[in-house]
Length: 223
Figure 1 (cartoon, one colour):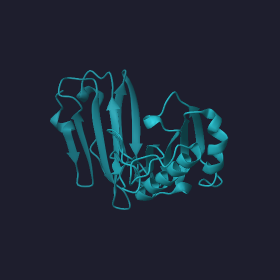
Figure 2 (cartoon, helix red, strand yellow):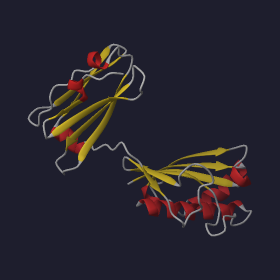
Figure 3 (spheres, helix red, strand yellow):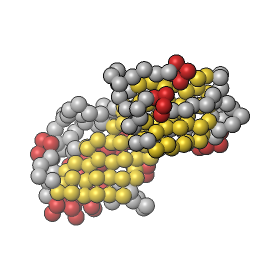
Figure 4 (cartoon, helix red, strand yellow):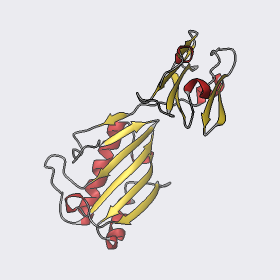
């Protein structure tokens, strides 16, 4: 996709816009990165996508940014125009990051595949499913669901700590059980780690878990 040089970059020293194609071949999808200074000296990064646009110059009309007036971005989706205004006050509230940070600690079991123990993004921590493995040995603490649940939550606590969060930061958990009949046993142990208000939760019985585990728990925490 060819990008109009006038639209490729506009920078008046206070705010900048960078438009570039997502793919090398002509495509109806293009990314728009907006970077504007916030009151605290950080930057607001916002990504927009145009879809079903015949061309980028047609789809986008970008006025030169100015610190004295709102910056208007006009994009097109299926030939309908949408406008987004970023004002200094809104920019100071909506501080968005389009990058993610890997969380890793040796105090919790290493990942068993191509995934991270946790990912930090947009002031949230996404913790992958945790098993009741002892970090030093890589083996289950025992064959009982009670011991595995206790170890799962200890491991999760170490991952949360490494991310700068804690049990009280958790807003959502998902519990996967090999046998739903163990729900009551798990609940008694789980309640010791999450005080009121307890995070939202979903619990499922699954056909099987990695390494024939009795339980696996994943969570989302807010920083």
